[in-house]
Length: 111
Image 1 (tube, helix red, strand yellow):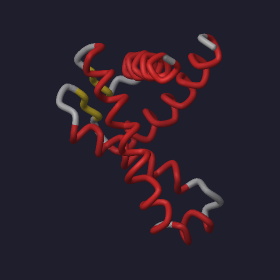
Image 2 (image 1 turned 45 degrees about the vertical axis):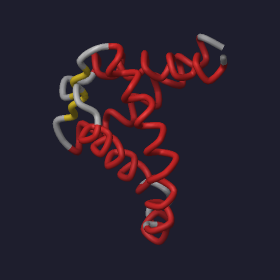
Image 3 (image 1 turned 90 degrees about the vertical axis):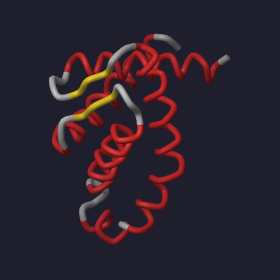
Image 4 (image 1 turned 180 degrees about the horizontal axis):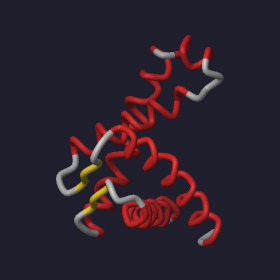
């Protein structure tokens, strides 16, 4: 049950973030649910590999390069999910930042 609630909260966070940022387009709530699942899978599978490969630059930038990795993962999710479109890298970067903040607050409200 907890996983289902977290999934719904993430989908709502994606919709709120898409509403706040003009360069992000989500067709509807079902698309947001799919984006939530795909982004979770991409973060679980692809992100650790990218973090290991980019470890020297991540250490050099004191971990800030992880934000760039997150933006690339959002762009990858945008390419994989029909109905979810991010206009460019800067928009994906802002989307990942705002999504983290919105998701944090929604998790605090609903728990």
